[in-house]
Amino acid sequence: MITARKSIFIKTYGCQMNVYDSARMADVLEPHGYRQVDTPADADLIILNTCHIRDKAVEKVYSELGRLKKIKQAREADGRGSMLIAVAGCVAQAEGEEIQRRAPAVDLVFGPQTYHRLPDMLAEVRRRGKVIDQDFPVEDKFDCLPEESASQGPTAFLTIQEGCDKFCSFCVVPYTRGAEFSRPVAAILAEARRMVIRGTREITLLGQNVNAYCGVAPDGGNWRLGRLIRALAELEGLDRIRYTTSHPQDMDDDLIAVHGDVPTLMPYLHLPVQSGSDRILEAMNRKHTVDSYRRIVDRLREVRPDLALSSDFIVGFPGETDADFVGTLKLVTEVTYAQAYSFKYSARPGTLASVAGKQLPEAVKAERLEALQQLLGAQQMAFNRARLGQTMPVLLDRPGRKAGQLVGRSPWLQAVHVMAPSQLFGSICDATIQDATTNSLAGVLISSPPEMSASAAEQTRAT
Image (cartoon, rainbow, N blue to C red; front, side, top):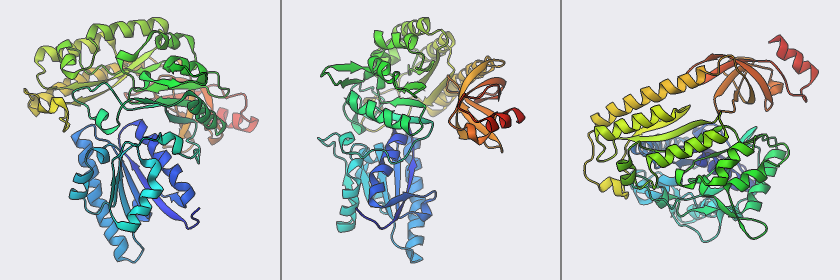
């Protein structure tokens, strides 16, 4: 065990799985003397945990590396010791040699499947200089990771599945994250128990295709996601469960039923559709149709009428016509979404769509994106305004910007701002919604949890 203290700064880009991975990198390095700091200038080691989904995300990484190079040079010129810069995640997996060509100040490049080897990789950097590790190891990285060194807080991410076998024609995930892999049931339940013991009340299950989960159970069989959720719902102290990101192809009968059977599973689902045109969905290799997607939504809302949906949309996919885009607007109008993520098509190197003909002009993509976002924004605003006057349970999980304010999560994943004493952090309290914007709600607490102290309850009433 190394006793000398060193500092680490981790900057995370992209999805929730990267957030989880960054926390686990810190866990790996903590026994080796690393403590996290808030600014890169104070760090002995900087890690950028990156996302490769779009061109803009990649260029942000290179821009940040240019800034970090100056910080590294200034630190060494001032005699404050050396600084190591590492690039992790999907950009590292896809562009290892390109990173070292464009950003020679980078010392270490490693993909998302190798971060359990971080101490050894850092030792190798100090021994022989720059290192690139883009392997897909035979060993399961989760078997090699230490237990979590700190609580994630009242809400936490838990990766249960990685990789993708779908090979959508626009997506690099199968190449950067590898084939689909599901963690064993026992390991997931054990990690969830530890989270709950440390104060977590809501867990979001993560995976590139999380509903493709098929993990080995203690009895030697395989559990799909629905059965895993049922088991997690039995954990005492775990009040809320969510999962993301889903693929329509993997919404099986049991998982749909779970949405009606398990109150702990929150009434909010991210179910990407990408397009409202069957012709474009086929070109994307999405393996579902507009009609099959609609039927899944209908079945989900039948078992859970208050279910809210979010989705992903790509506009300007190669060959997309005006009629195809109108199909997307029609689907959005019919389904209605509480939230959505929409993007212009971005060609990713190595994907089939990047070499397809009929690439659309940027101006056309921008015009379509604006029209789609106006519709989605109006739906999100309408969904939030429909909460006005409602009383709902809110999990208070972070401080607000104002003094005496906490922010929490509604069952539908909306941010809810309330005036509340700090003693209520981590509690689930009833709040009546008094104001709504496109991105958040504001309310007033009307009840406190039973375990709350009398003094804190009095303070709540006073505010």
